[in-house]
Image (cartoon, rainbow, N blue to C red; front, top):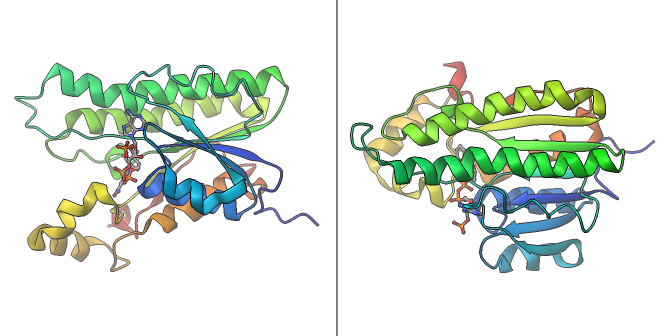
Length: 244
Ligand SMILES: NC(=O)c1ccc[n+]([C@@H]2O[C@H](COP(=O)([O-])OP(=O)(O)OC[C@H]3O[C@@H](n4cnc5c(N)ncnc54)[C@H](OP(=O)(O)O)[C@@H]3O)[C@@H](O)[C@H]2O)c1
């Protein structure tokens, strides 16, 4: 019997695969047998070296939300991971339109139009597809001083549901992962602040920060046949944070 957690013969495209969670997802998908298109706006040397013959590179700067319009034309892609994301912090009273647009373009508008391009290609070849969006705790909670990030990540959860509704019958699964506090460059400043770090850790039932691998293995599950009946889910991978 074929192992329902394997991805042999599949091709995955991961955005923001040069670092952090995206890099871990790219490597885990490769370990599960997939060929991986490592999409990033800068050279993803480390990710590509680790993937070897299973990886190829694609330059993709999603500050142009339509940058991926032709990314699925060259070869069939079965799995899309919308991981690239950005954050800008300021009091909401002072938040600028430039910061708002920069965050919304990468975190929400690019997610929609990249997914649309992927789904069009899958549909045109009458194939099957898996979309995995990287949401956030701020898909559910408010946060502070991050209005565009919170709005964008709530939007990602909403998009996950509407696209699942529209495409489930056509053989495309759309789901999301909401990571908790994960040890990446993104959260280095928080972890270096003894007070914030202790307060966060104290609230995590699992008693530790998440690791990129925790998200990566969940992505393998959502990419694999094992999750074929899961549509429109936003899976919390947060050490229990949202359960408190
Ligand atoms: N770490 C956490 O605790 C946490 C929690 C919840 C959700 N998330 C989400 O997880 C995802 C990955 O974040 P991370 O923690 O791994 O942080 P990270 O290390 O800062 O990675 C963010 C990735 O997105 C890429 N990116 C940003 N703007 C881009 C653009 N315009 N075009 C293409 N790529 C762009 C970055 O590329 P560059 O290296 O070129 O900047 C990088 O590869 C994000 O969606 C984030 O919101 C993270």
